[in-house]
Length: 85
Image 1 (cartoon, rainbow, N blue to C red):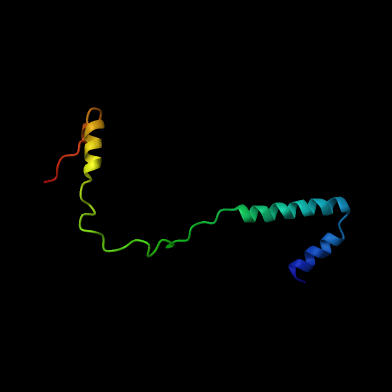
Image 2: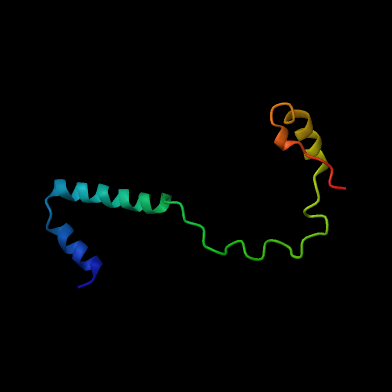
């Protein structure tokens, strides 16, 4: 006997008030399965990054250097960025 046939057999033999409860529960399960977010698959980002990286990929960012020197040095001297020349 298939699952569908077993469900129909059980539903046919239930009293009307339990059939309504079964219907509500089935609707709940359908909504739950539709609204469950899917987990990202491992490796789904493969091929989206262009390699090799540019020559200046790890070069210091001048914009970040000026912002950090202006706002971080007063409170956190270890964050002071020095020139790497």
